[in-house]
Length: 213
Image (cartoon, rainbow, N blue to C red; front, side, top):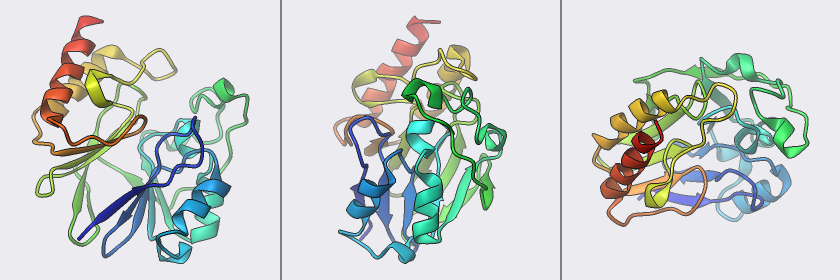
C-alpha cells in the first residue's frame, strides 16, 4: 500500500510530499532543508529516496532542492520549460522571500505525458502552465490521486498568476484539463490534503479562474 506523508519544513514552505512506494520519491523540496530532512527520517532512510520531482521552479518549492539532493543522492527532475529558470531570482520569485535562488543541476527533465513508474502508482506528468510557465501536475488514474502543485488548491482556490511567466488564460486551460480527471485525493502545493468531493472542488477552481479572465 502506498503511503504519502507531508514532510514540509516550515509554514511558508510549499508542501513537500514523501511518497512511499516501491520506488520512493519526494514531490517538491520546499525551502527548509534541515527540518524537511528531519521529517523524512521519521519514515525512511534518506538514501532510499530515488527521485525529487519539482512541480515548478518557484523558490518555496525548490529552494532546498540542492541540499536535499545532496543528502539523499536522489535524481532531481524539473520541467524542461523551467530549467532555464534555475538560479534566477526573478523567475523563481526568490526575491519575494528576501533570498537568493540557488544554483543546481537537474538529472532529467519532465515533459507532458511522461509516466513516473513508482510501483503501484504510475504518475502521469501533466503540463499545467499558468501559475508559472512550466508548472506540472502528477496524476494516477487508477489510484485517482492528483499532486496539483500550485495550479489548484482546495475549496476552489487557484494559483496566482501575477508573477513572471504567469497567465490567467493559460491557467484556465490547465484547470479545464484537470476538471476532466476523476480525482479522489488531491495533494496541493499549499493548504491541506483533501479527499472530500475533489472533482467538485476542481470545478469550483475552474469557475473562479474563469471569473477573473
